[in-house]
Every structure is written in structure tokens, then in C-alpha cells.
Length: 223
Ligand code: SAH
Image (cartoon, rainbow, N blue to C red):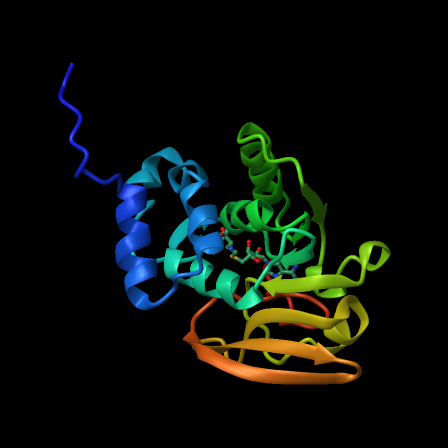
């Protein structure tokens, strides 16, 4: 038996320390959630060596799994409590969905690419995460029969803030985090709703894949 080296940290732990904690995200709930999700399981076999790298990575269908820091940053800005119901738009690999599921009461996740949704469903099921509801379709329409939500996360970039969705499906006192702006660079924003007021705070410039739908970009003509 090889001797256990207590100083040796796992790749996941190193990722959390170097990419998340050292960049200022210290919320213990967020760190615990990141520690409890095996990120490598959200990568296809041939991409696994990318699992802990400091960047996004392809997941097929022209989409990407978000950079670990971006997942941590958006999650900490959402300030999720254990009683919260969270709407996530853009399931992708399901990695961020799993992180949200560790923090929230229920997660409602919508994805417009069916094979990605199916893979994410399988992964979360395999990990024993059961507080996530999945839906195939345009997430900019939200999930009307489950609305309003305490928190809304949009993991793809819209040309403008999807106000109709936030006005109709975010709870009073709720928080949404999303990127918006031109295709080559967006601004991540935190939006708080108080009564009819939406107050927007800029978080940082970022680059996401396109949010495609009613309150997003038009679908490509080749789709
Ligand atoms: N956070 C995810 C990555 C999301 S990538 C992860 O950790 O893996 C953004 C996803 O948003 C893509 O899968 C894309 O297909 C999806 N998407 C884009 N527009 C959408 C829409 N209107 N409704 C639902 N999903 C959408």
C-alpha cells in the first residue's frame, strides 16, 4: 500500500484553492458545493484531462461547460439559501446544475439542445441528485407553472436583459445573474427585484455562448 500523503491535494481541491479561493470567493457554502460535485464526470472521456483546467471546454453541439471560476462567481452572487427554488436556463453539461442542487431546495433547469439535456439528466441521476427538474425548450420563456422563482441563473449570453422573464418569473426580493451584450463579449450582471424595480449591478466582463430564443438571439438559419 502506498503511504498516504496528507499534503497531497486532489486536482479538484487544487482547482478550488487556486481558481476560486485565491480569486476572492470564500463563501463556505459555495466551496462545499464545489467540493461535493465530481467535475470530471461532466466531461466526455476524451476531454477529461480538461476537467480542472482554468477555462471552459467543449461539450458538443457547439456548446461549452463553463470555467470553474465563472460557475463559482455566479453561484456566490446568487446567494442561494436551502429553501430556494432556482430556475437555471442552459443546463449544458449539468455541472452548474449539480452545484446549484447542492445549495437550493429545488432546481428547474431548461435546455434547448435535447441530447445535452439527456446526458445531463443521466449524470445527475447517476450522482444521486434528485432535486432537479429538467425541461427541454426555450428557457427564455421560463417555467410558468412553477414560477415565481427565488433565483434565476442564465448561463448563456443574451443581446439584452430578458426583462419580461424577470418581471414575470422572478420573486419580489429575488436575484438573477446573467451575461448580456454583444456576441464577442458580454457583461455579467446581478439583478435584484424589489416590487416592480429591477436594479442591475455589473459584475465583470465575460464570454458565453449565445442564448437563443424569444428573449435571446435568433436561431442560426442552419439549425
Ligand atoms: N453552465 C453549463 C454550461 C452552459 S452552456 C455547464 O456547466 O455545463 C449554455 C447552454 O445554454 C448551452 O447548452 C445552450 O444550448 C443553452 N441555451 C442557449 N439558449 C437557450 C435557451 N433559450 N433555453 C435553454 N437553453 C439554452
